[in-house]
Length: 380
Image (cartoon, rainbow, N blue to C red):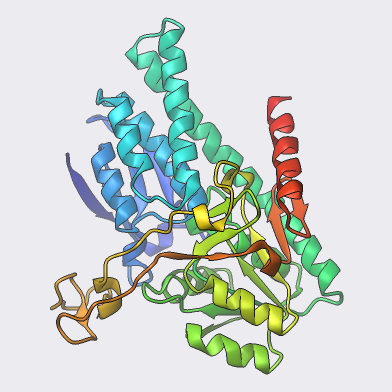
């Protein structure tokens, strides 16, 4: 097991950031990740040579975001197969690295199934590894296509709900190219509005405690020359009260069968604020995020993160002193409540936008119909 970091020059990375890629150097195949824990201070790549390194990258949030976790999980299975490790052990470890994001297990299962199907058909280990890699690459392509389609559906919905353009959109966490094979989910909708000249302002929640909004969404917005403003999470209410928010756009890590949405913690309070202020609250996610096996929000397992993420602040290239590797901001021994996600009930969600279309109002029946339609399209 080994990993390494390789610095990449700023002039070599296009605006469409390659958040991960498969490479085959002479010493063996690797999965290369853009280390998101180092952004925005520096663009550094993490080279994964086996599944355990990738598992740690997922847990540490070096790679994060539901759609790209599915892609990374699939590539992780292919990596284990190509390097001769136990594929099923690798798949189990990868699928369990983060429990809430359903896309991770979906991607892992897809590559694992391709691997075993090839073996069952009489193929050797090399052929089976190739099948797993092909499945991962196909998932990567599909996610990029889904991202573009979600952006189109989402922009059409915004224009329908808010005629005249000049949209002022509030977003939470990070949902752009860093979480996708394409340009993202919720962020991709805002980006499409920007390119059409219909985005007046992107309000970016800092997204505490790990600042995915400040570090990552602002980074992507700046690279795309979008008009954006950063705010602390607890300032959102004053924005709503001032009438400065036309719509909320967020992503999702798991959508239950009844339409309950698990997303980065802080999403539920935004839904409550949006309902009180009569502002559309829109969730953008691929169909793979809908989990028919999870009946409702109460059944969603919410990941609990380490307390030091709250009691310490970390930043690249800053001297550290805390037990978790950060700067202490609370007294030693302070206990912290740190759920990674919260769950928004369907009655607070105006619409769910997927690559297959829009569900509004959000009901279990409408979601099931959309997923069934998606399966028919996939089969045909």
